[in-house]
Image (cartoon, rainbow, N blue to C red; front, side):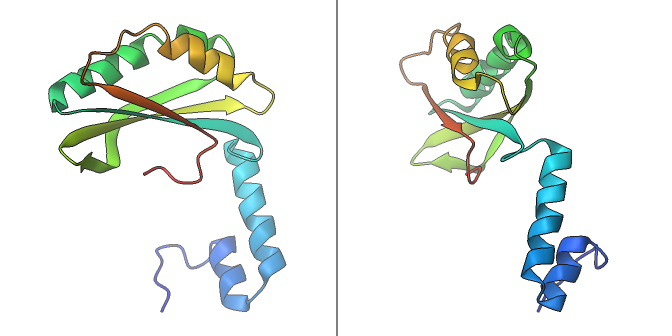
Length: 134
């Protein structure tokens, strides 16, 4: 069973028709238009801490200090609760960075997160061009 609010969407039409090539064309077009991989760059940032308010404050502070990210033409989205917001007593907050294809994203990310001094209980992870956002 397939349920959708967009039955005329090209991806849905291709799936229903069994048109694998059509599916890939539609998906590639949508990704190109949105500027996401493989036509752009992304990075997922996960901050975690036992203290929910502290981790949200840390995420907000990181988002405010987005100068190194903006300098390369990238954007920061978030912070927001991670899809899995709590694991083993640690609250998780996510930020997303979206950048043009040719950007030196790793060096910009390094300069960006290097501005913060993480509290002892906080952790930060960076996933370049993530395949999922969990």
